[in-house]
Length: 163
Image (cartoon, rainbow, N blue to C red; front, side):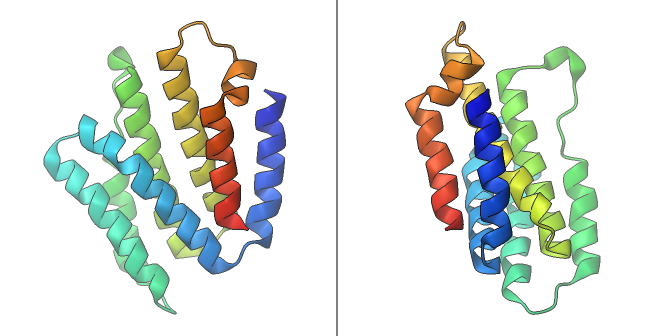
């Protein structure tokens, strides 16, 4: 668990020092990586909406001024995509929640340019890897998860995107 806390401390510093372009690229890349998890879980029309939200952010981040009305509309739509079914708390649902949450954070970042949204997006990717390792290895501990080569590689990839 200490490895995770150390990573978050380093992530905060890296995000605060990163250029706008690095933050945008990292956020978009992570949302694209998480999107297939939602697509496997959701109805086609919902997965298309989530893909459209990512595309909107790509377009808006390329502009000097963002269309806050359009972003607000998509924020409301994406919030409705969140899988909420307490009786069906499955791995697939957890992955889908992370994907929707990452896109929601991307929309918020696009609108407000607050670094916390980028940190949250990065954390959601780490959560997904954590879940995948836990799903594949029933008795794995938190320390083993954060010492796992897949987790270490993911953490390094995130850092590299922000340097």
